[in-house]
Image 1 (cartoon, rainbow, N blue to C red):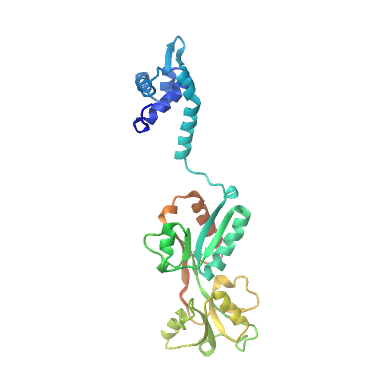
Image 2 (spheres, one colour):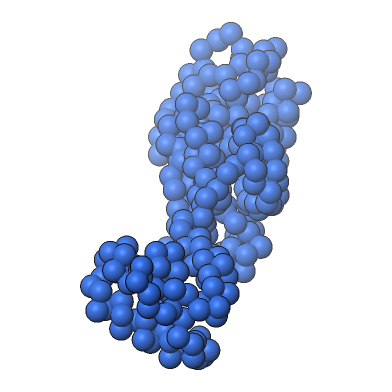
Length: 309
């Protein structure tokens, strides 16, 4: 047989049709070609395999032993090529894979916990590996394949990444039920007079979006403590007379704290999902991205992460 680089796939399809129909006329009808065209293809097939392949008879054409020996492997090869070209099916219930997602503590609680709960029911063979967001390297991690997707704010995403808006978040003010300010309206004067706690990833920033909003009114507050996690921030409020501004989604299941609106509008933030071009068309990754987005519905508005508050 000639080198595969010189073989026309259409010739193999014609050979399969001839083997199945034992007729040049019927093979031509199946292939949507003329009878002379199929006869010409048979001539080329004979040259390719260096064998007559078919002998004319009163009822059509009869395959030679060489042609009969080719029938099964040829049919399997064509089926394999068809499967290669067909869209890859993804069955969540049967999937076995590991998906690596970078997320902040807020996104882990607000987005990934619901996602992992859903996956346990719908796709128990999918494992989720959660990593912290490394701003200096998560783009390279995606490109190299060590990271599949990330939950970030729009300002963290590069233009080269694919992204999907998930929801917009707002802030609420929290304090413990026994706080001296509990039971009284939280107006601007009282709000500014209280001691506040703040989340800062590296524990070094004592100001956030709330301070910017207050400064626009010529007001300020005292931030008495800074912690690197919103979850720790909530616990700190439980155990002290500090108040804090916290993303509202984190408070959905909190029953032991007072949740009140801030006395002035505080800008919220958006949460987006980003991924690399190499995973754009992957059926499994697409299903997981869709499922992740579904877990965000009904909890807030539309997409993002957070500036400090």
